[in-house]
Amino acid sequence: MTQLPNSLEARDIAFQLHSYTDARKHEEMGPMVIEKGEGIYVEDSSGKRYIEGLAGLWSVAVGFGEKRLVEAAARQMEKLPYYHTFAHKTHGPSVELAEKLVTMAPVPMSKAYFTNSGSEANDTAIKLIWYRSNAMGKPEKKKIISRVRGYHGVTIASASLTGLPNNHRSFDLPMSNILHTMSPHYRTMRLEGESEADFARRCADELEKLILAEGPETIAAFFGEPVMGAGGVIVPPEGYWDLVQPILKKYDILFVADEVICGFGRTGNMFGTETYGLQPDIMTLSKALSSSYLPMSALLVNEKVYGAVADESHKIGTFGHGYTAAGHPVAAAVALENLKIIEERDLVGHVRDISPTFLKRLHALGEHDLVIESRGIGFIGAIELAHSDLAKTPGALGAKANAAFTERGLISRALGDTMAFCPPLIMTEAQVNEMFDIAEAGLAAVA
Ligand code: PLP
Image (cartoon, rainbow, N blue to C red; front, side, top):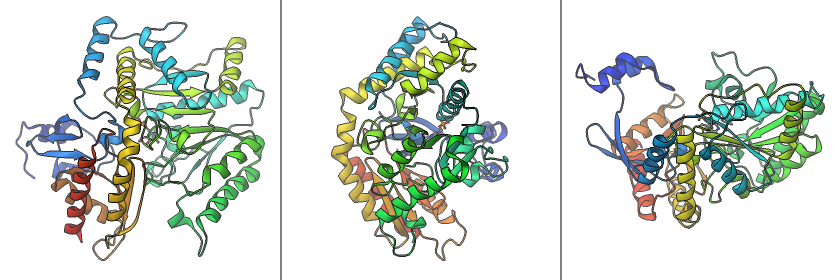
């Protein structure tokens, strides 16, 4: 495609390296420039409007153009644009947000710790867990288990937790003390004739086998998303978490619930932890925490974690970790206002009300010849496209569907051949129908 020499497109090609992008193809095709957003819609530089069917990157819960967040940021920017929280310093927005998060946690949590991204939150969780093991005089208790197809970020440690080949390949990852147990994806992982309940039991058995093979005394923690997101929107099989959690308890293994996508309403409860009756020791939060208007993430840690870390930092040395911008006052002020909006507008109740339509339309797409499975809960879902003569190469069919959706005014996300839907929580019933009408038309064009 020819670009005007001084256009944003041409300058993007000239100067910017993009994530998850074929760089040479990008040089040929150029970028899609998104210029503005309002509600569930964004607009590109040609003035074409799209439904943001993935809320950006699973994140803009309250939609685009929310003036209250802009005003909260401006107010805080005037008052105190930056301060940190190292070495006994603090500021109002970080205190208020910490109090808010600890108070709203669905299980008893002692403290909030701030970071800037989901990756940093998970990375920090690993360091806290290791610090705790050392503090308890159990230096051998350092191994961490996560799951194939889990997504926990891209820093060296969080990318190691992630169970996707693209995040390991070419980086010499995962790190040696991070192990993966099987993915809880029933359709692809079940044995011939295996029921969903038996499959869930086998997932739990596999986890226990791994723990026993490695030595329970060497396993410090297990990380899991209540519902896997970027790995393809994998809704756990019935009973899965009820079988997994007792195993973690039995071997004294900390449970980290990665709520980076599920947190703040996505699954129809404020947290995925509530949806599945989880009892995590640590929760990692980001994305909808600030609707990603500014970078913000947090960990909530319970007394079991906090107590050991606090005693140790008092005795032999501080927790030698922290990010310059963590708990940033402007980002914290935006997050607080964002949480206020989620509560005042009862967006969680809204998701619960509209989810039946969302899931009905999602599963109707599942009837299409190209679709082998539709799966979802709350306001998150996906359809997995079958490989066919149209696309012998994995991912090619997803790319086609993605192009067909985009052409018709819907931004979704192709995770290989899986098309994900994770709209802003404010999406109305009519807009849900509008989104799936486009997806249906797009699929019909691909077929
Ligand atoms: N955890 C989960 C469940 C995620 O979905 C993501 C990002 O998509 C992350 C962690 C990493 O977050 P970030 O991209 O902000 O580093």
